[in-house]
Image (cartoon, rainbow, N blue to C red):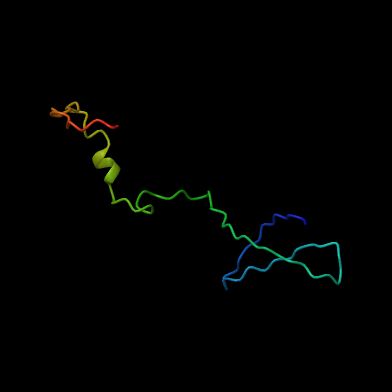
Length: 84
């Protein structure tokens, strides 16, 4: 068994054509294909592309700067029966 990693490009027709070099002729092969798209790093996604509403981070960044967070009174703990 041999493992090959190839890069190929799907055309506008949505078809991916693979040319796999093999050393044997007139032989049947069992082929397993795992498709893993290569994410483009040329254009990073904007927050809007990722589902955030426009201006969300600008409205919320530093929103607590004026007043420190305050933890309210938590009350009494519930009394439970002891485990055996």
